[in-house]
Amino acid sequence: MNNLKNIKKTTLSKEWAKLDRIDYDYQFKNDEWKSVSRECYNRGNGAAILLYNPKKGSVILTKQFRMPIYEQNPQEGMSIEVCAGAIDNNDGALETIIRETEEEVGYKINNAKQVLSAYTSPGALTEKMYLFVAEYSDTMQVNDGGGLESENEEIEVLELPFSKAIEMIKTEEIIDAKTIMLLQYAQINNLLIPA
Image (cartoon, rainbow, N blue to C red; front, top):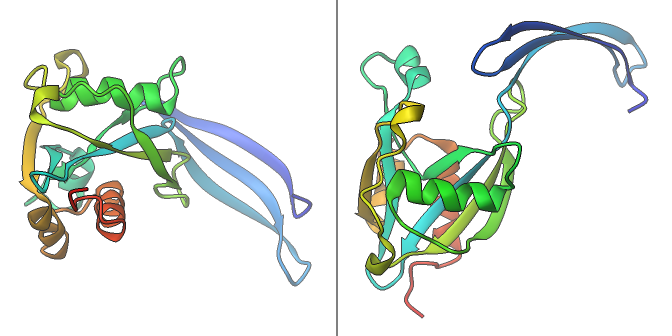
């Protein structure tokens, strides 16, 4: 980019993820250069999956505590979401979501279809989410799920009628962006209509 120069990063925190203040000069459309400062949170990229069963008309979702939701509204804190996880340096998005599916919801899948990718909050986060769908059946369940104790996860697995999940978007019981995107993708593409 020719309208960006003098980029300087200062690390503010390097705990669970990395928080940088980035100072830079940006040339606006009126040709004026301005010094700008932003904070940028880098926690890596992630992958998420909507498991769906056209015969049953159901989807698998998770429910877990999320501190940022609680911080925003102390009356809340629990979040209903699709299965998801951070992409480790050694894995790709597909490998990550296959592993996370077994750990979080207890289903063994061999493959999934990537349907979308999106930045979750590009004004502050570097995270890009790779979004997948895959069919599931009862025979694919290999454990109860629930996440890993070593990662301090306590995940409730929910099998819901697809129509109920769509209604939960309207009633704001589902407020997670990646989950809304994947449920709406399923709705638009008629994934829950038996072949």
